[in-house]
Image (cartoon, rainbow, N blue to C red):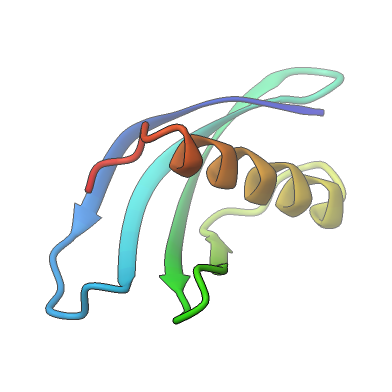
Length: 87
């Protein structure tokens, strides 16, 4: 299982500068097929610079949920650290 990309990333506007909310479509390469799944996630930074990611998958997928969430969280964190998410 691999996360190929995040498509159609849209950031929700908010007044809190340390909380960013996003809607997008995650492209997942599963062993049998490639699937596009709508997701919602938020990234909250604490005063010490640590980031907490809250993830919601908006559709049921035919694959165990824990490995999918773990791969998505790692992918989102790497995309954010490389500056590829909208500010």
